[in-house]
Image (tube, rainbow, N blue to C red; front, side, top):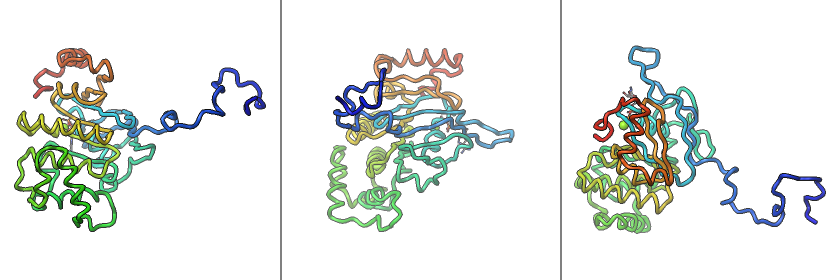
Length: 297
Ligand SMILES: Nc1ncnc2c1ncn2[C@@H]1O[C@H](COP(=O)(O)OP(=O)(O)O)[C@@H](O)[C@H]1O
Ligand SMILES: [Mg+2]
């Protein structure tokens, strides 16, 4: 006789193994908050003026732990604004941002650094040229921590820097004391990526981070991105202008237009889609407002 019998009839409830099944955190999805929850967010630039621009329009998106979402969309669709709102750069006037169930909507950008790693399009943006590779990494390692002394490079830290850099196969692990200003754009972007993931952020935000590179280097950064995201199971939002890349990477894809999600694909459906089918669906939804060139340029 189980301990539940005394509670009377539990007809319709799955009581059979309640008393004997061990609690496995993997089996508690209903009680685990999403990794990232963007809830009815609206962000307007220059409100109540002739230049008013609604960049995010009642935008909602939920990411489970380990989701890798690629984002494509027309110019001005609100993709960068979305990433900036998640990073705490802009505050939405309506709606909320939750990370692991915690309301971070009103946290200032510097407090968000603890949760968010970010790589931008410009290879010069993510690293400090006058600092060496190891100094840049030391700063990244301590990002978001309140206590300073981040730049100190101990032997233990050097070892970790070397092993993380070696994974990329660019030889940067042998150049720890080289100033970053001497590196190529591709090498700097690779370093920016390593720095963004170094403190294992809750959310990784990539904003067209391969767009400024030549095709070979873009491919290299794409490969390193896929490798790092998989190795650390990072929950990731990646904006790209490259539809083929958007289809190839990640487990979900969203297509944005005028501050909203026009189309979402995941799993099998995403795997089966082609650039042509994606463009066709997008044009249907936007009445052909977006030309192929706009999306692909
Ligand atoms: N800092 C800003 N100030 C004023 N308007 C902005 C700002 N950032 C973006 N916008 C406007 O918001 C809209 C969305 O921009 P953005 O998020 O950069 O689009 P995307 O990255 O998809 O090209 C555009 O109309 C853009 O002009
Ligand atoms: Mg943008």
